[in-house]
Image (cartoon, rainbow, N blue to C red; front, top):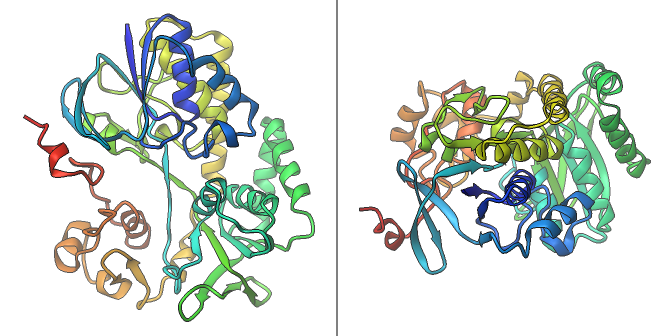
Length: 413
């Protein structure tokens, strides 16, 4: 039996390892040049998580593994068929059983100055550092909401950056409830959080804070933040602004999978609503590496007609409980809309401001009138911001889900 797996992050690698161990042929497809996804970015030479190395050792030279790296999925052409594009052009791939591990995207919220060079997403800065960008001696402010802020600050600090401040939008009461929830049901996660805080000791941590604006004539030089006690200004070279992650459901939508709560809907065996299609990892809901690993493994087992153990199902439930705690604790608060002023650019591809979007009643109407979402990213960045700012329903996925050449699209009969 052959499994096709989209994505070689933790969920994809776990699915590949389980599939190979069970005797399947596995085809692992990823648009990055190296395995690992965003969580284990940088490839085997950069990994510090022993679980990544252990999985990779099990799969990398396996005779039943086929790898297609730097191959992006353009779309689902017909039932059981995907269109891929790599440096040699387009290729149609037929699949019998498909596991979608398409990960997540960072949520970007606009504020004055967010388009200046030097302003990135929190995950974006982490990825740049893992990719080799030098930040030694550079000043960094991390702001937004969620645990990714701490992880990004720790990565930048370990790379030699000077962290000027960590600005968390949630207040102390909600953060305390999150910590209590970790202590009560997720002691391992609590130890991770304590370890991160210990590594970041001495760095100002401002709760209930909010970005006011990023400043600089041509590139970022300073960031202004507001807390309940004061307005403060920090000199910085980089502002990592993180407001959480959103499941990447584009391929799942094209395949016809049901979407619930912004994620690909999957049952406890990771089955989607489409026969012979499974989903695992962040595309089924944000929960981190532990959730991705167990979901990937369960998806592969079920795709091969094997049952997960009671312990594996218990681990999955525990991971989903943590995922729900994250969602409750770090849900974006309406007050974050105040960051965006009328003159603030929302769609950076087409330079569309908030005031130009405000009069419209929905995404499609605004798109027709302003070109929002019609630039290079095709709304992958600004549609989430518009959904949050204006309560619009975002655009549905359609072919091609990634920019593709005419040559690749010509493969469609």
